[in-house]
Image (cartoon, rainbow, N blue to C red; front, side, top):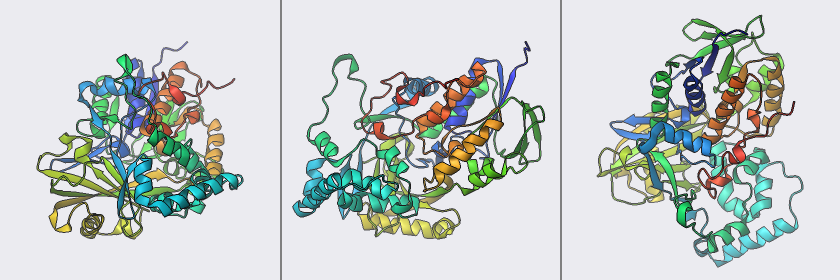
Amino acid sequence: MSNRRLSVAIIGAGPAGLTAAYLLGKVGSVDVQVFEAHPTLVGGISRTETYKGFHFDIGGHRFFSKSKEVEDFWTEILGDEMLERPRSSRIYFNQHFFAYPLAAGEALRKLGIIEAARCVLSYLQAKMLPVANPKTFEDWVSNQFGKRLYQLFFKTYTEKVWGIPCSEISADWAAQRIQGLSLMAAIRNALFPPKKKKGKDAVIKTLIDAFRYPKFGPGQMWTVCKQKAEAFGVSVHMNTGVQTMQLNADQSSWSLLLNDGQKMDGFDYVISTAAIKDVIGHHASCFTQNMQQAARALQYRDFLTVVLILKDQQRFTDNWIYIHDPAVKVGRIQHFKSWSPYMVPDADKVCYGLEYFCFEGDGMWTATDADLCQMAAQELEHIGLGKASEVLDAYVVRQPKAYPVYNQDYLQQQQIIRDGLQAYPGLILVGRNGMHKYNNQDHSMMTAMLAVKNILAGENLYDVWQVNQDAIYHESGERGAEEGGRLVPVAVQH
């Protein structure tokens, strides 16, 4: 038996890529090289950007998982640099702020007795006459909450996020992200909250109460993870994208052609976290035509954040607020000082992130930074969270391929690619864009953890595609309560 060391290439230094790199490097018997296109920052969409000493996320990233393995990983990387932060979020709708998750009494009061009655009647109607076999987001949510509540609280925000009608979004999206919820369940949980644990279990809080968070944002986690992986001997190549890949004639090793023209050869495995559309759709010399066509058909939603810096007048303390008002384009507002006070260098200042969902190349994406900053300041004032004249400084960050789109055809395209991968031994797709699955950060990490277990075992013990990406436990689950919880898939049946 050969004593040759395994050689693994990892495309992308986000949560999935760096999790795999760290765990493989820790073993000490695997040569690992990571290729990251960003010139300076790791973490992918979970990176932390900085501007004049202000730190801000690309979106908000709570560090919470039911998986003990994931929680232990975070602790191993950052230890005491992880803060315990209070969680608070609201919905802005119809000139009112509603607690999120729902506080039934408040919601009924602010909706008014007539509107509240209409919501309840609509819910009862949906239960008596549901849409059979719902295929769209609109039908699924209407079945679950009633048509009226769907129109009030789901339609506007969801269409802001995805840029397409709810009638064109797959029901899989709703089933994945909000399964298990209903109007009655939400009201029951609000009126009769679960009892607090006592004794030794009291320190384990639900995410409704608190979450963990790195002092200087999620990018700190992945910057330190990179450093620790490098200490194990992992090579991380920044500003180095992969142009194409090739399964060699021996059908057991891979070559990569980098964007700078350099060729890297002899990889036993390639772990890819990059968007399927880029990895498979643009590598004509390697993948089948069916796989390429399916990959190119996948769609993504892009994203930009307008950072506004103001004097702190303590107008709100939420970590983030969902904006359901159709009169403004902003979809969500982050309050980075509430995520961590270390994110803001001046105690007298606040740093808000106004998030806009768009498509790369559309009018929002191509607008000038000056126009975006002016619009964001005006919309902040419209919502009542600050005056445009109070904005001291502003900054814009654009993020392509932030969210894989769950349109009506995505599962079919995804399945074509999954089936086709059987002919490409050693290529493993993990992470959000790598699998075109709307993974949470911990789910992306779990796909990488299972990929590493398969590589070290020399066989596919686990199907990484079975990692469950649903988000329901983000509002009700206990941190690290299970060894793997629903994140650990069953072993592949041989």
